Amino acid sequence: MKTIAKKYKTQGSVSYPHIGRFLTQYFAKYGVNRAAVARELNVADSTTTRYMAQESLQFGILWKISVAINRNLLADLASRLPIPFATPREIALETELKAVQEELNALKLENKIYKDLLK
Image 1: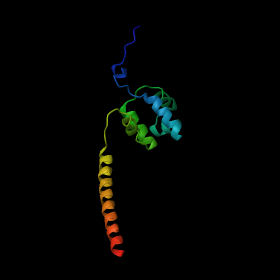
Image 2 (image 1 turned 120 degrees about the vertical axis):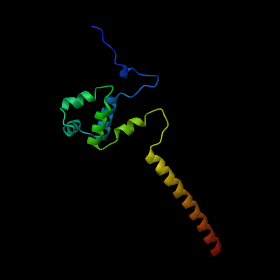
Image 3 (image 1 turned 90 degrees about the horizontal axis):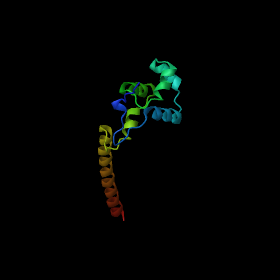
Image 4 (image 1 turned 180 degrees about the horizontal axis):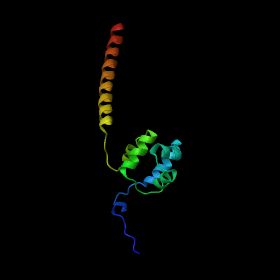
């Protein structure tokens, strides 16, 4: 019997990470208990074992695992994209940082002026 390749599993010019391997490495690095995740997801322990063997997982499954472990796995995966991007939160933080740096520079100048006056 001929096996038909799934189109979504065909790697393009930029390959995507093996999601199961990503989860396995993440769980090991951060000490996430796979059985506890299975209980949180209300699935069999063997189901989470299968997730960790799969090259690709549905978005909904990744979402549920992220919620179960209180970690944004989707952002972790997105950071691996070979496309430069900034999240709205990062843009807001960069804007805030720039304003704080400008205020710091103004305060340094003001401080220098006061020191010069005291001399």
